[in-house]
Image 1 (cartoon, rainbow, N blue to C red):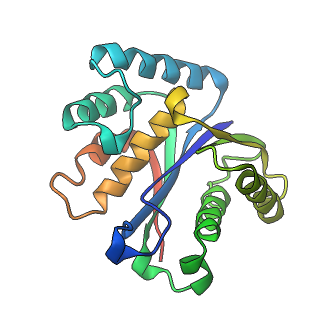
Image 2 (cartoon, rainbow, N blue to C red):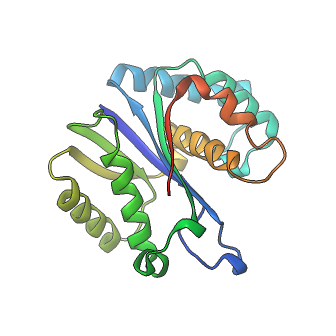
Length: 201
């Protein structure tokens, strides 16, 4: 099992100073390496087909690229599980005041509510972070989840097509919760790949 995790929206709570009121975090799940390789090859080929040379990043792609990307990956062999959080529903002062604690908590929830899919999985999380953050996250997940996941590492989305896939899918899920034009447009395209979206309360 191979899993790629990404988020959309910042974990901060300074809403009046630009923090996003919506936070989404999710994972792309591959049953095996062959499925991951097939998906990676398809995404690599999309750069030429869509005339898009940069990384696929939902917040920075135009609608044409989003459409082409979501249509192309909708039949590929992966599943998506995600958590959608409206920050107004978070009452814990610890989570509201500690950005790392907020992020770590929702990574843990995501991995814990996996539908039984992640036993022994290799997990890749977008974002390099500093050494202390990576060590703290790894320690936290081992303490909270035990041996459920075998291997947790950070990836760089600029060099990893499957992390870009996670970004595009989670970006589409986050967009569906925002009061924007066509807010469900890309989520509806990805519906065949969506296994679960948990609206956190």
